[in-house]
Structure formats: C-alpha cells, structure tokens
Amino acid sequence: MQTSTASNQRFFSSWPRASVNYGNVKNASATRKHAYQFQPYKVKETWTHEFCVLSDKDQRKVPTTSMKQELREAGLGQKSIIFKNKKGNFNHIQEELYKNYPKLRESGGFEFYRQGSGKILSYIKPPTSGYTIPYLKNSYGIKSAIVYVVPIQNNLSMEAVSVEEDEADEMNVQLQECYKCGTDVPLRQLRSHLTTCGSRTILDKEECSTHDAMVCKCQKKW
Image 1 (tube, rainbow, N blue to C red):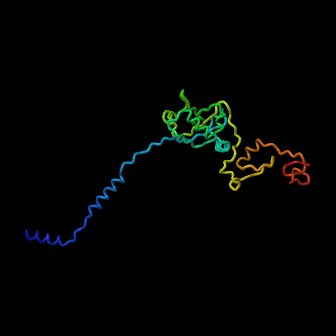
Image 2: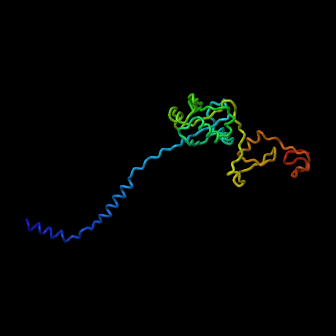
Image 3: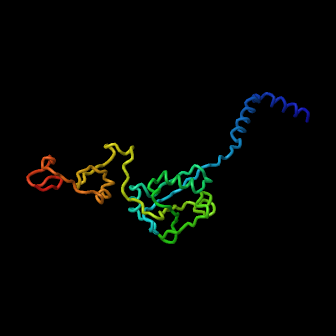
C-alpha cells in the first residue's frame, strides 16, 4: 500500500503545475463587483403628454384626420407637450399650453376632454383648484389618452400660421401662385389662403407687365 502511494506521488509530481496569479484573480473579482454595483434609478421631474387643441368651442367629437391637419396648419391640433414640473398646478399647465399654442390665449378659458364612447368627447371635470398634473396623471388616470383642449368663450382662428424659419428656405418650401392676388403661397397653406384672399386690383394698364391682347394673368380685362 505504501509502495503504491509513493508511486502515485512520484507520477503526479512529474506533471507541470499551473501558475496562479492571485493578483489577477483579485482584480477580476473587483471588476465584476464594480460592474454589478447598484445604480440608483433617477426619477424624472418632467411629464410629457399628447394634447390636441380644437378651434370650435362647441365641438364635442374627435376631429377627423383632415381636420387635424387643418388644425396643425393653424398652429393648433395635436402636439407632445413637455411639462418641466410633474407636480405642476393649473398655472404651470396653462403657461406651457400658451407657449405651445399662442392662439389659446384668446379662448376665454378652456376645458379638457378625452375620447369617450365612439368618437364622442368625454368631459374631464376639474377640481375646484383647477387642473393639475397629479390630478390628470394619477387621480383621473388619463394614462396615454390624448387630452383635447376645447375653448370656452371664443372660437380660435383657423388662419394658417406663417411658415417657421427653418422651413422658410425657398428650396424646401413648395410654392404656388394664387390666381386671385398673384402672391406665391406655400402649397400647404394655399386652400386656407383662398378663403381670405381678395382679387388683385390694377388701377392702370401699365401696372401689369404680363397682359396680352384682352386678358392678363391677373384676370384683369382690358
């Protein structure tokens, strides 16, 4: 038995021994520990939600797709609003809405609605202190529903707003001449422009350099 044990010791002692760098093992363990350190969750202080401002104070139905487009061109319609204070009161909500929808200042007050049964808008009754973000988010629980903003006293103008500066480059804006007044108008605003446009008035024949025998491009007959 002793002879067998001694033989085994001599056999295994001839094997090369693995070199263990305990410094590397320690460093690897520290790296893994650092990687799995608890990262505290940073709570957002803002609240972002979809709002849609309507122009008609008596509207109680969800606007159609084409109507939403017209509202957007008028500076109204649907936008994603970021509120800096998720605990904001009515004044905070009102100020952010005014900032994003300047025409809303002429509403004479506004109310909030959400889509109810079918396409009918359902009234969101405010507390006595007015709408607040905690009320909309937690108490009323609107979740991801669009909040429709309806003016109370005055209808809001549907006149198209001017093109933003970043879209004003002629290379990026498609223009079309208005046959009534001869003005080049952005194509997406042409239809609303026609509702308020008056025909061009020419007092003297020489003012029109494009006329031919009897009719010129401004529709003035000679």
